Image (cartoon, rainbow, N blue to C red):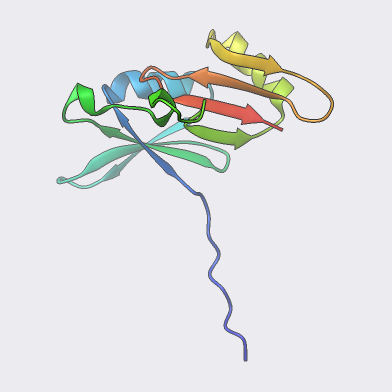
Length: 126
């Protein structure tokens, strides 16, 4: 008898941020929903849109906020989300968010990248 496998959701990324308030405002501007999570010892914020969730956690020291994309030799993005690129690009531009890479729009695979208030680069493709 085969055991039924547990279903996974996510994955979820933790983003260490300089200011929870500024980060929340940025992600709300592009359609993410806010949820405060945790107890008295550890509190963080979930910012979710559809099946994507970023956990925002307040850094104790500003210098601890170091996106992977800022590391020499690292990738040009910290997170990658699959989507209808053209539709999301319109939303992002209407919200006044700067596209820092792309958009590269073609019939095979389109992509663009934005940068949040802490320098995390989120790429969208599909």
